Image 1 (tube, rainbow, N blue to C red):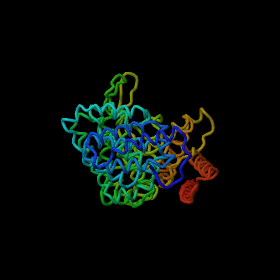
Image 2 (image 1 turned 90 degrees about the horizontal axis):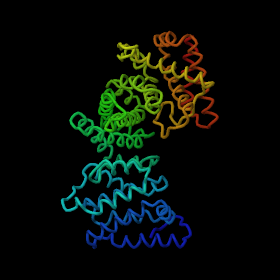
Image 3 (image 1 turned 180 degrees about the vertical axis):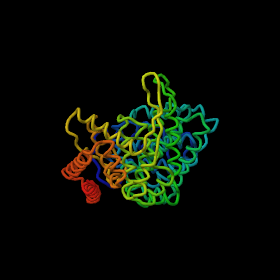
Image 4 (image 1 turned 60 degrees about the vertical axis):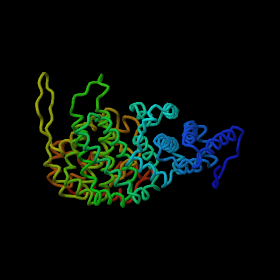
Length: 480
């Protein structure tokens, strides 16, 4: 079992594991009865759920043979077997080192399930195999799919297939082109439109938000530094509008009261969904003028800017993505830089026992965020420009995390970049100085210079980033 590649020397335990897998694979052939195939597939999944077993199979290059035999068993139209095959792919893709084994044929299978799941027959509804399948996922506590299994009475075939596709495409740019060729971008866009439309009609709002969040992460993976996929989604598939509509639905859910004792609250799912959509939009507008134009034309500037008011600094991902999105949209567009001035929001501010409505512009919201971060940072030490995997022309970050100070510094860096970009227009510059004081130019310039220095010392400063930041610094210097 397994061929080609570098294999590790076998131990007695490895031999037992490989023999066990080989024994079950003997039943995964077209001539066997369906019941035998189901039983064998379940046993293989149980083995894949064990981390040590998975390691042995990877070391001996056995995973490709397992996937190939399960796909070629001739039972993929059977609901239970199909769920088992999806589970096998999910458990394999859960380990980053195994993702090289997920090929085009597996992605094609997952997309077909997402588009048209196989039906569950009445005879299979009470099958004992379901408990075994759930137990396999219990071994993988880190899998999001575990949550899917807990929330559903039936095995959530489509949800687990989406999760498998998300993991298979994460940090795996080799699948970007195949997914586009087989129509996967269109299929995913259709799911976004369907889920967004259903949000107004269904009581399962949380479920729709969760599905949209995973689809967003898949689309983020498929558009990361891939201009062909970005152009396809913006120009041909017109994904921008349903994504922005999804964000509006998220904000509407977040405007509803939330109580800590309310376990059914949609707020956490809405925040995750909105953040996922921001990641997609950051990629769709990264150095792509048509994407930026569509984003502005469809009201994206207002939607992104409102995130700066909607979230506190503890919602790091949403805030830094909203800032990056606004940078992308305004960096090369004077029209968008000026349009920021005219975007107005109304929010209720509590005062003593009463509340009043406050009017704030999008530009003022950026200034307020920066002022808050400066005040917070002054209590902890000298502000520094945090290192980030985000580009300027910003692409979505592939990871986030760090200490509270580091995250605050990152927010301050990107709010400083946005202020510097917006300040290229004299009207904006005057408003920024009025809101934050005449010393703001030096503060922003200092943070941006530190940003360049830190990125250069870390060896991640690109010529594109340096040119963009230098342009902003020159504009601030000339505006004095």
